Image (cartoon, rainbow, N blue to C red; front, side, top):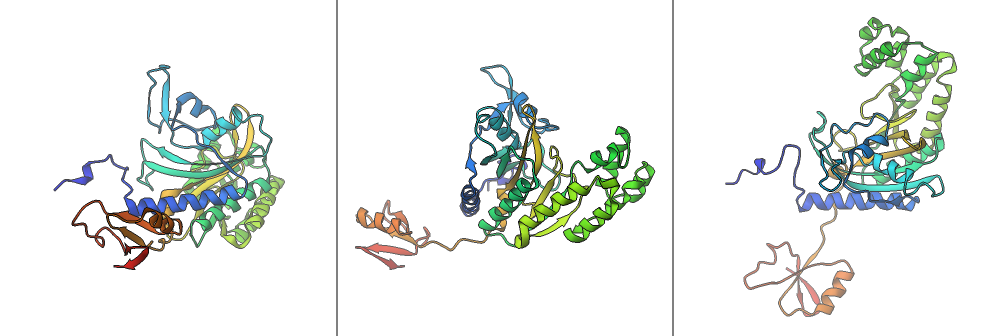
Length: 368
């Protein structure tokens, strides 16, 4: 017996018919939702110059990307690990003169040298949308609401969105709660681990209330407002309220203002989206700036493979067996109204074993 466990590298897997079908349905439904809201799909290449990928998003590193030398240009190429920087390049170059705000959608494969500890997959199908040229709560609200709608279109339920403020410590450290650069990094580390004792030890006692400003949005928002910080948080809170109002009752909203996991280049706002049945996050998004052009943007990415696992099963399609000599016009007409057909190729075929539910007799589909 062949040991199939050794046929592919760790973190990579074949998508067999049933799984591939679920992924395709989820992808189509989500893309249709984006298109309906005016987001035009683009298809950036799988490979780019490493320097180009690294230059479009602040703090984006290519160390987790597969790299090799292009024999034509002799420059280093990188296999994309995230599509968002590519959308930034397109917006800043080929579509620099297109009127703003610019709405773009995408869907494509990405690959990682090393997987996240929480997710062993090294290949992901990413689908998302980017709203470029607007840095407002209204733009962020549109993106969050669109991410929720895309998941709902794929058939997911029990959707929740967790808001965060990726640059919160940087903002407070400047004036309201002063910290040196070294202290700020220590405070961020302790907030990441939710360690109150550690936070005190590194001189971040003023930041302790942030550890408890988490949970249900309304309650966490009120706790965040109570911190005040000399009014430094007021605009952030107003923005969060506007975004939450746009989402309305379409999803449960929570807040964890210091969460940074998965937010390498986001600026004032970030969010993680979850859904019933999806292991881990269904997607992430937030606000950011495109390096080079310094243009503001807001977007999200959904992890289609994970989303598809939780999507409902499609109704099993009726499959029609077409015996040798069948009428091609009749078969074409039946396919046009939704039938799936399998044509006989030789003697001794078992129509039921091939997954057929009916057989064509003349112009009629007869149950097997």
